[in-house]
Length: 158
Image (tube, helix red, strand yellow):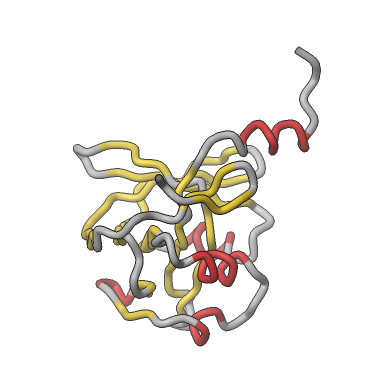
């Protein structure tokens, strides 16, 4: 083995298929905010915990560094445009997407495969990212197939 470059590492990590989620919350002005991430993971059933990561350079880093609650919107197979919208630098993403308000006024994207409403349990430094652990306080499972990402491309379960 040789030393790994950032490009090599990104390509290696791309071999792991992930679901696509949009993490949402409300900023200090009461405005809904969200970001596409694929670093979501389940942690524990008892207590019900999940984790995800946000880059320290992300526009919404400060929001999630302080947010007490957030929602995990697990995207459905037909929601690739939503993944791309929330990964973009567009300023008013919620005006381009249908959504509703959940508990704690958390923004919930419509027609997702599943949604998890969470309270922030822990935050940990993780290199150029922050690792967030959330306690699941409510779920909504719609039963549709998830949007998958693998090798730098969107994929479907077969």
